[in-house]
Amino acid sequence: MSTTFLGLPSAPPRAPYGAGNLRGDQKFPKAAHTELQNTQLRGNLHKATHTIRAKRLAVTAELPDWEHLRDAGSAIKSDTLNRLPELLEELEERVTARGGTVHWARDAVEANEIVTRLVRAKGSEEVIKVKSMATQEIGLNEHLEAEGITAHETDLAELIVQLAHDKPSHILVPAIHRNREEIREIFLKEIPGVDPELTSVPAELAAAARAYLREKFMTAKVAVSGANFGIAETGTLAVVESEGNGRMCLTLPETLITVMGIEKVLPRHQDLEVFFQLLPRSSTGERMNPYTSLWTGVTEGDGPQEFHLVLLDNGRTAALADKIGREALHCIRCSACLNVCPVYERAGGHAYGSTYPGPIGAVLTPQLAGMDAAKDDPNASLPYASSLCGACFDACPVKIDIPSLLVELRHQKTEQAGTTAESLAMKAAAAVMARPGLYTGAQRAAGLGRVIAGRDKKIKHLPAPFNGWSDSRDTPAPPRRSFRRWLDSADGREALRAAKAEGEASRTEADASHTEADASRTEADTSRTQGDPSQARTDAPRTQPDPPRAQPDPPRTQAEAPRTQAEPPAATETHDDQDKGEKA
Image (cartoon, rainbow, N blue to C red; front, side, top):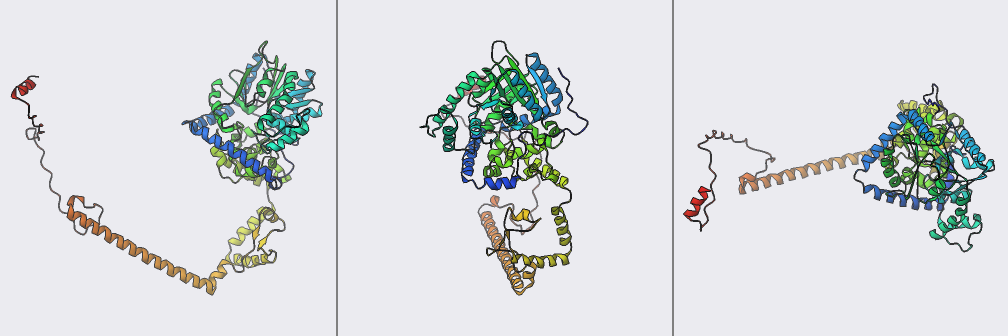
């Protein structure tokens, strides 16, 4: 067993720049502007996210202890991160004891090299893959292709994305941006030997994909998977999926290579009891996953006879070192936050430029890969890809406070940027607003903005540094008169007099209403008292002082205690019956 020390004396490295898929080519606002023009995309996203959201709400409402489960999941994740070094070493020891081999990869480059070396050692030129966010993060498919090795995605949605030469846009449903007609066209174009009469009926599309993948399953010697969880106590790995392709990949090939982020480890096997309830309900809106696969090392004569576990860092220890940002490592990749996010629903996953889109991606991507505001890094724009509505926090099964993390990242970005045109503008605005004379002059100067406004009285283009505003939204032209100038004019004074008169009239009317109400209550109390003095309102205004209270009766002796009257005897009762009763 190797010795691993994660408490590094210096700041841990982020994921290497340019390696993997943790950084886009454009800033989020520009990329989102392009995606917003695609009405088909927006329609697809709206339908899919609302469907999954409704299913999730239905199945979580069935559990009276859902909030307790969320608390338990959050607590387990916090405990895991606090003890991560020792748990990872325990996991390595258990996997090794059961015949597996553990590899440590500090970043995407090392992880890709390890997997490539293992595949080549088996003499294979192709691999089959289970859906894996970690392998997407490191860009494994692209690296294998460059090395002459073909990776076949077996998850249906991942297969659609791969055949379309596209990129995933959702953590759980990678092809969420495609509809059935688009998928049919992709299959007709990319799958050899497909029936030209193929329709867009889901069952037919699934059958076509199944026929295409069957040969891959039966002939592949090497499979690559991710892992939802790794159990330190037993060395067990867990994969949950909905199609059965994972079961095929995990059992048929001779060699299995699993790439797992180091934050996926759990302390005990019993912890799965919590997460196997949280994950399916939050991801697919199901009570349990159709396929749950657990395996521990190598079993002779059953399944792959060679097992390799690649533990991936790639910036995770850097996130762990951040006392605030480490909370993002609690994520179990359920995608619940994506399905409730209004920004993701309209912009889609490609606008984020990362393997991890949506609210959690806007937090996790800068944590893993860093963000350099000074160098105009696209990742520095991700913390602003949110309205901070808080829906993601309410939906998260492990209670990650994503809005607070986004605000913290915005603060870090501002601190990195130092003195900018924006900060200088804010300082100038503060100085002007602190001086009434300057403020009045600035208001008058702002009136010149009407010159550059169009006929619709909107300013659509401003020079730098104000173009950051006008490029995203229209600015209304300044009014001809400021509020203060209008208030000092005859119209303003007249409006002020009218407002005062209206206010006085309203107060007079309100006072009259209160007086009338008091009179009505007094009259009602008087009538009630005359009819039954005991029913007089205790809260009615008193006009006479209370009469002196009567002194309480002196306590009675035992002999004077009141006697309870017995019920009169029944008419048919005889003296003999009474005698019998006394004897009894």
